[in-house]
Image (cartoon, rainbow, N blue to C red; front, side, top):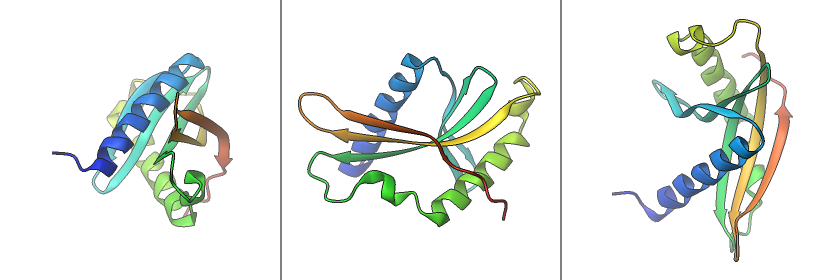
Length: 127
């Protein structure tokens, strides 16, 4: 059974996927994992592979969700992206893809969720 926080996160990822699809993305994977590494959403649009971190909050949250994507989280995303790029899943995708790291926030407010998309949120620094 999911905790309330996990339920909100799952709803946020669903909203994020729908938003990205509406923007022309094809969702490749949600919650892709390799060991302890995870990417919330991996999508493809045109010739770009997007690694998307989704941050979700309820409307009464006091901290902006995008501020939670700190250096440690960015490092984790880059390592996860490298693992994906070396995986068998990657072999089924076109070879000449650009890679981009995005952040998408979902804040549940009434009457509808507020979604903010930050394409090119950061450049990968290889650790």
